[in-house]
Image (tube, rainbow over all chains, first blue to last red; front, top):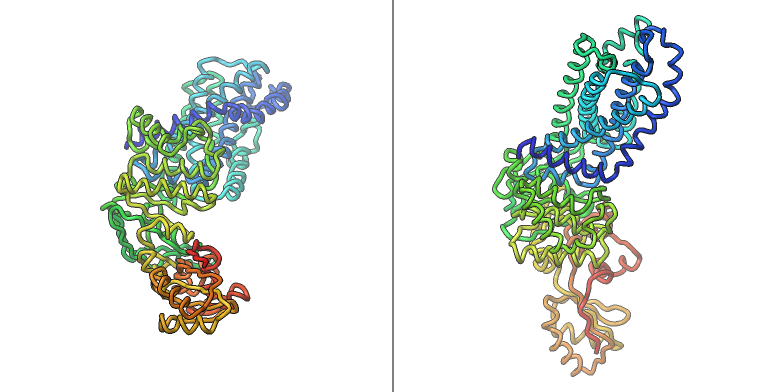
Length: 252
Length: 351
C-alpha cells in the first residue's frame, strides 16, 4: 500500500477521534487564551519599544503565541503515540499491508490540522482583544502554522518512538522546549535582545519561523523575513517526516 | 508455515547484555496449532516478535508463510495476523478500529465495512461495537483483538499470551473461537502461554522454552508420558494387603504408602482399574476411594527444568532434577504428586 493511502486512512481515523472529542482541542487552548487575556494587555503600553514599530502590539504578540502553541503540542502528540504503543495498537497496525511511514504521516497531518484550528480560534479571540491585521497575511500565517504543526508532530513522534517511556519523554520535551521557546522571541520580540542573545536566537530555527509569522501578520508576503521563515519551517517539516519514518521503521 | 533456525536475540541493558533468545529452532506445519510454553522471561515474546518482524534477529534465520522475516518483511506482515499482549485499550471505537484495520490490509471501504460487520457477528461484538476499546472488559477486548488480527483472513495467526488476565469463562470462550478458526479455515496458530491448561487443551503440539532455548517439543500426551504415567491413589485401612495386591498386579510401579493408603504410577491407569478393583475385592480389601490423576504439563516442566512453571521463572533453589520444595508437604511427597494435586481435573472413582 502506498504511503499516501496509509496516511489517508490513518488521518481519517485520528480525525474521527478528534471530532468525537472536540473538547480536547478546546482544553488545549486554555493556556494560550490565558496568555492572550492576562499577558497580552501588558504590551499595549510598550508599543514604542523596539520590535513593535509603534503599531498594534497584538500583531506582534499573537504570531508568537501561535508558534508557542505549536511547540507545546509536542507534549500531547508524543504522549498520544506512547499510549498507542502501550496498548499494542501501533504494532497491530504495523503487521498489515500498510506503509509504516504512512502510519506516522497520517497522524502528523491530523496534528497539523488540529493546530491550525487552534490557531484560528486563538486569532478570533485576539480580534476581540484588539488585534487588527490584514486578512490575507493572517491566512498565510495559518498556512505556515500548519507546516509548523507537521514539523513539531514529526519530531515529537520520532522522539517518543526513540525513548519509548512517558517519563523520559516528558523530561526530554521539557528540556528541549524551554530553550527553543526562550530563544525564539515568542513572547517579546528579539529586537529587545542584547547582541549575544540575538546571536543565540539566530541559531534557533524556531526564531526564524516566529519572525516570518510576524511578517505575515504585518502583510509582508515577499520580505526576506517571510521567505527565510517559510523555508526553515519547510525544512524542519521535511526533517521531521524523515525522522518519524525512520523511528517507526527502527522501533522494536 | 513457520520455520526458524538458530534464532537469537540479545538486549543491552544497564546491567549488561541479556541473551533473551539463544538459538531457537522451530518447525510449524500448515494448519497446526502450536503452544509456546515457558515461564515469564523465557524468551517467548522476543521469539514471537522476531517471527512477526517486529524485532530484527541478531542471529539465525526464519521464514513465515514462505517469506524471510528479515529480507521479506512486508510480505510476512501481509500474510500473518498478530494479536499482541494488550494492556488497556485506546479511545477509538471498536467498529472504527475494525474498519481501519481492514483498510490498512488493503481492502476497499465497502469490503472493509462488510468484513467488520462479519467479524462483529462472529466474535459477538454487537453489544459494544460503538464503545471505545478502553471501556471494554478484558474478555471483550480480547475478542476485539482477535477479530482485528483476523481481518484479512491470515494463513498464520500469532498470539502472545492471549488468555493472560482473563477470567475462566472468557478464556474458555477465547479457546472456542481459536478452535473454530482452525476447524473452519485451517489457520495455523502459534500462541505463547504460561498457562498449562491452555497449551494442554488447545494445542496439537507444545514447544517448551526456558532460558531462551527450546527444551522440548512434542504433543501434550507424549510429553506427559515421559514422566511415567498416571498417579493412582487407593484409600484404605488395609494398607499392606492393598500394597501386596498392587505389587503383584503391576510390578515395578514405584509403589509408595501414605498414611491413608497406597499410591503408584502406571501408564493408562484407566485400563488397569477394572482388573485391579476385582483383585482387591477378591483379597477382601475394602476401599474408601480410588483416584487417578493424569500427570500435568507442570509435572513435565518440572521434570525438564527442575522448576515449577507456577514459580514464574524464579531459579530453583536445588539443581535439576531435584524438584524445588514449595511447602513442607511438597517436600515430603514427590514433587510431581504435590503439583498434581493443586490444579488438574482428575478422574475420580469412589467405591
